[in-house]
Length: 317
Picture (cartoon, rainbow, N blue to C red):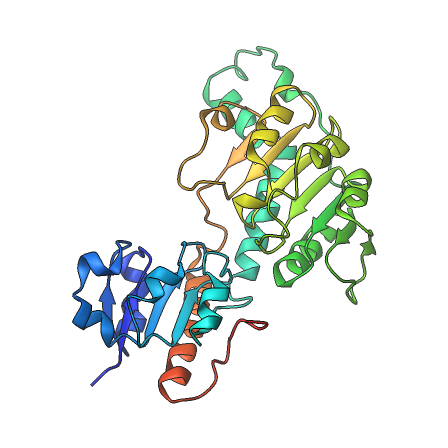
């Protein structure tokens, strides 16, 4: 008989098909588990699948007294109360690097779209303004990528792939992370120094208490009026109000955002800017990435039910 696994977050059914072929899935569809299943049903749950950004507190874990493994679908695990899990001797698994290539691709896409003003250019053609030779200030020549300084905040798997892609555009690459890495890019000693140095700030750092609103009004001011910010990590890393203010007063030139503070809700102020490109958290949303993430989820669950350590366990918990 297949082992029972609770699906805590709301996932499209297609994402769970392969996993459901090996395990008996109890889908809470994003609702509190106790509203969907009885206490008796929950008492036997030993493993659950969640999206890393979905809040998962100790009180929810207590609804499943037999719970010993929380497996995150994706790289992130910032929504899980790690201290509560450790206290309850629950292992945390995730899918490190599984979607890194896809996320790096969307980061570069956003960078090019906002710096080359692709959305205003598209509108310029569709509106008939180009064929009518109507002038547009948004169509003025912009700096290209050659020789531009691009700063990467976070040099993990995603940060490295972003850097390697951007380097192909003949740009200079600098980075700041908690530690230096053996990479062919300039290391800056602080986020402030990185913002002073670069004209495009690419955010690829893991979400957490130490990175919450790390990119605040002061960092945005250091980018200056010709600077751009691109965020593909978590919305919490940017102070969203400060970003709106910086865009409104022209403190920065624009932004490319795949993540937001309170998804799926995006402030009207952000959607109104022509120099902002927005995507609905689709960085890792490719067929290849989902297969790789599912592989990690299945491997973690198989190891857990076999009494072995999780192959993709979150370290330091």
